[in-house]
Structures are given as structure tokens and as C-alpha cells.
Length: 345
Image (cartoon, rainbow, N blue to C red; front, side, top):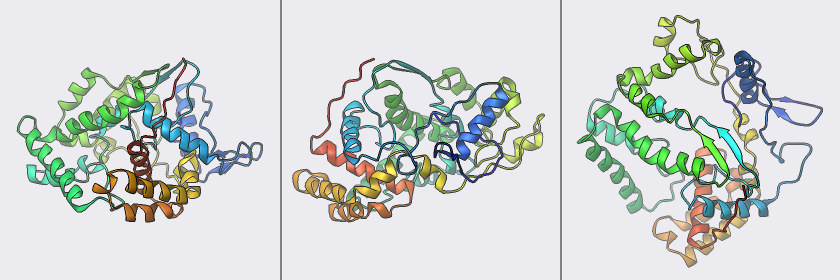
């Protein structure tokens, strides 16, 4: 798994002429953190065939099969942007940072420093909790209204039982950690995953802090300066500590982030963009079949979805690309095409 800390070296991806690979800022950052902490670092990120000069050609049929198996393995819960893999044939132990986003106010930036003072304001913000609601604009109007009203009603209902300021964290635990992180961490036989950040003690201590302190990531700061002060001098990737923390810190903190170039994330994505670039016609035909054979059209405007699918190669925005792949996923599931997959540890 690639680290996402950073080094402070050039943001321009560097091509290694010996093997045609691209050393991204993310990989350089991980290496910098490892060096500072005294660990060896060996990048294991797969190189995307569409961008490498060596390696097997991109195989759309293999991706389609992985999508069908993904729907079976995760019971159509997890967006297929994540968790795609071949059937596993070994037992692995992985230490992950799943759950760490909780201490950043649910990883939704709008809640970190926002001055939200009323339940009504909180409810309106929740409609676009983590990203714009219906980014492709394909939901039927009644479905779009239903989903928005459900989100608002959850805020009002939960607000009767919980402290107003912890509603973003509560929502994140119930609907992100439970429906995304947990299946990815536990739904694959033979993949043993340790998530040290999923700690009840840590969660309780974090929730003792005020909204402002949580928004400035005080908990991360206090844990890091005690547990690993040597790495606090390494800048974050495209981020910095809050100014309040920098001003009062007993440790000299970086004041500038390591900034990446926009194509970096796309380069590191191994199959998603090549799939969308090559499979527009097949995606369109899948949506057409789903419109004819299933009730997917009761929720989505299938004509519009077909049009977007046909032009999948034109997508540049990751949020929209994820939404389109989710649409593909829904169509495969409703058509009964989830494919059983057996992992053999």
C-alpha cells in the first residue's frame, strides 16, 4: 500500500529509464517518512499498464470479470473503485490506517472548521456530506428529493439523542466505517487486517475535545508528538497542520505542504481510467440492457446514463468517474451477474 505522507522533493513525476516506471510524489513521500522513522521502504504499488513501457496489455475482459466477482465478494456494498482484486491464493497480514479519517471529523472537510450553529444548518450541509449529491445528475427527481430528505431527517432524529457537534462523527461511523471500511477489511478470506486506529479508547478521548479542537486535528497532533516526534518535521502531502497548532507547537512544524501535480492520482490508478477510456460502448449497452430488463430506470434516468457511459472516456473528474462505475456495478447486480469467487488462503 502506498504511503501518503511526503518528502518535499520535486512534485514532477520522475520516469525511471531502467524499467519505465514512474516514481510519484506519493511514493517519494512514503520513502521520506520511512527513512525518518528508521524503516526500509520498498514500493509495491502496481504500475498501470496503460502508462508503463513494459508489462501486460490492459485487458478489459479481466476487469469486467473482476467487477462481477467484486459484487459477489462484497455483496454489492462497496463501490468498485476500491477493493478490486484477483482471487487470493495466500494468507496475508496487513496493518492499515482504516478508521483514521474519523479523527479528521469524518474526512469531510466542510465539517472541520465550519461554523455550524443550528440543527437546520447541519441538516442542509449533510445533503452533500462527503461529496456532491448525485454528481452525474442521473437520479430521478423524486429519488433525489427522497435521498436528500432522508439525510436531513437523520440529522434531526439523531440530534434528539446526541450532542449536536458529534453528528458528523456518528454518521461517519454508522455509514462509512460500517458500510465501506468494514467489508474491505473483513470480507476477504485469508486477508488478516489489523486496524490499530479503530480504538474505543482513542475515539472517546477524541470526542472529549471541542469541535474546534477536533477540526484542527488536535488529537492527531498530540498522539504523533508523543509517539513519533521524529516524523513531525516531514511535511504532509498537499496539506499542513492548522495554524493554531503550528503557533503553539513545541516542535518546529513544516509550514508548507508538498504539492502534487493533478495527473498523479490518475497515473497511480491501475485500471479505472483505462477501463473508462476503452469500454464506453460496452457500458452504454449494459445500461441499455438494464433499462430493458430491470427496474433501474425507476431510480435513474437511463437515457442520460447511457449517454454518459458512451462518453466515459471524456470523464476527468474522479467523483463522476466513481459514480459511473457505481452505476455499472448496480446494473450488473440487478441483471444477476455477480460471479462467485473463491479465495483460497
